[in-house]
Amino acid sequence: MIRAVLFDMDGVLYDSMKNHAVAWVQSMKKFGINMTADDAYATEGARGVDTIRYMVKQQQGREITEAESQLMYDEKTRIFHSMPEAPIMPGILSLMEQIHAAGITIGIVTGSGQRPLINRILRDFGKYVTIDNITTAYDVKRGKPNPDPYLMGLQKAGNLQPSEAMVVENAPLGVRAGVAAGIYTIAVNTGPLPDQVLLDSGANILFPTMQALSDSWKDLPPVKGQVPVI
Image 1 (cartoon, helix red, strand yellow):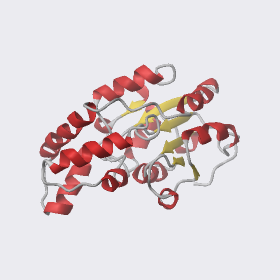
Image 2 (cartoon, one colour; image 1 turned 30 degrees about the vertical axis):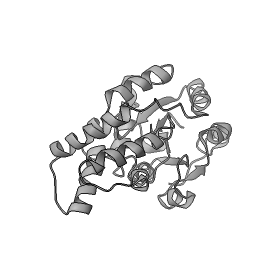
Image 3 (cartoon, one colour; image 1 turned 90 degrees about the vertical axis):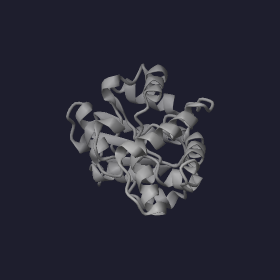
Image 4 (tube, helix red, strand yellow; image 1 turned 135 degrees about the vertical axis):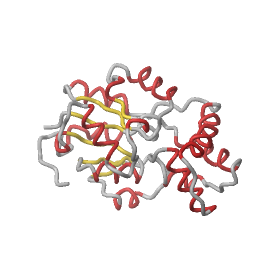
């Protein structure tokens, strides 16, 4: 029986990845890092500080502290929040309404830890989500693609077993995290990556849009009570 659905944030709740990609490219350029939009999409879901440490190691061959990485991430955050607010993803509200009506807990599991974004989740989705069911970058030491964020999401949802939940993700690292946690993982390809990248990451099923997922929700095997094969 499904008792919780755990959603990623960027690219799932909000059509925000275009803004994030621009902020990543502009901010990292200031620190001598050539980060492309493709890099931003490929590393989406990881903690921001981990992405920066990876890019610095890859391009400059040096290790930096998490504190130094945080300073660089603060600049990325500043640029992101100077941009227009990203719209709510079409289909997400109708999907959450179905889940909520069925008495299923809704959790958010994001690699972000930015307080303004958390406040926005509570503003836009407060009917469905409480602060206690939001897992951020600061709740875990290891971010996606490690299973830790989704395992924490299970804990916050009521110490659930992986078989009692589903994950909704749009990024390869996020899909890998959900699969590593042993949870039935739905990929929704709201970005520019090929579908096969998400399927190769282990997604159980893939949809082209959040609206398509919402329209098919009641027909998904776990929702119908069929035991998924992980």
